[in-house]
Length: 235
Ligand code: HEC
Ligand code: HEC
Image (tube, rainbow, N blue to C red):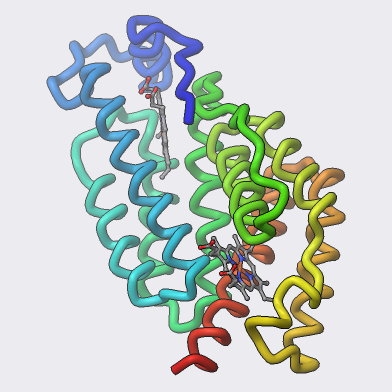
C-alpha cells in the first residue's frame, strides 16, 4: 500500500480554509495535518475491514464496523467537509440497518465513492495502483487482489488502480471449474458465476464514478453470496 501526498499539509489546510468559504480560523488541534492523516488511516482501516467482512459473508461484522466508521466521523471537522461526512455517515447508518448482505455490498460501493469524491474535490489521489501482481496459481487470491485494486481505485480515486484490477479480473474470469471442488454448483451458483464474469468483463470500460461503485457493489455482493453459501454447506 502506498500513500501519496500530492499536496503539502500547508497547501492542504489552505484548500480546506477555502472550502470553508474563506474563513481564516486557525485550525484547531483536531484539524492539524497529523490528526487529519491519522483519522484517514483509521477510516481506511474501518472500510477495509468492512470490505473483508462482506467478502467473507459476515454481515453482522460489517454492521458493527459500519458503526465504528460512523463514530470515527463524528468529531469536529472543517466546515467544507460537512456534505461528504454527512453522506459517509448516512451510508454507515444504512449499512448498520441493512438486513441482507447484497444490499450491504452495494452500500459499501457508495461509501467508498464518498471517500473518493471528497479526495477528488481536494485535488488528491490518496491511493495508487499496487505494483505487485497476484500469484498466477491461486485464483481466489487473484480475485481478492483485483477487487482490492478496484476498491482503492474508487477511494483514491485512482484510475490506474481501477484499471490494474480490471485487467486482472478480465484475465482471470470466474469459472465453475475454479469452485466445483469446494461447492455444489447448483443453477443458482452458475447464474452467480455468469454475473461475476459479466462484471469482470465490464470493469475495464466502466469509467464514471457512480458506475464503478455499482459494478464494485455487484462484484462484492457476488463474493459475499458464494462464500456465505459455502459456509452454510459446510455447517
Ligand atoms: C471530507 C473529506 C474527506 C472524506 C469524506 C474522506 N477523506 Fe480521506 N482524505 C481527505 C484529505 C483532505 C486527505 C489528505 C490529508 C492527509 O494528507 O492525510 C485524505 C487522505 C486520505 C488518505 C491518505 C492518508 C495519508 O497517509 O496520506 C487515506 C488512506 C484516506 N484519506 C482514506 C479515506 C477513506 C477510506 C475515506 C472514507 C471512509 C476517506 N478518506 C474519506 C479528505 C477526506
Ligand atoms: C462462485 C463462488 C465464489 C465466488 C463468486 C467468489 N468466491 Fe472466493 N472462494 C470460493 C471458494 C470455493 C473458496 C475456497 C477455495 C480456496 O480456499 O481456495 C474461496 C475462497 C476465497 C478466499 C480465501 C482464499 C485463501 O487462500 O484463503 C478469498 C480471499 C476469496 N475467496 C476472495 C474472493 C473475492 C474477493 C471474490 C469476489 C470478487 C470471491 N472470492 C468470489 C468461491 C467463490
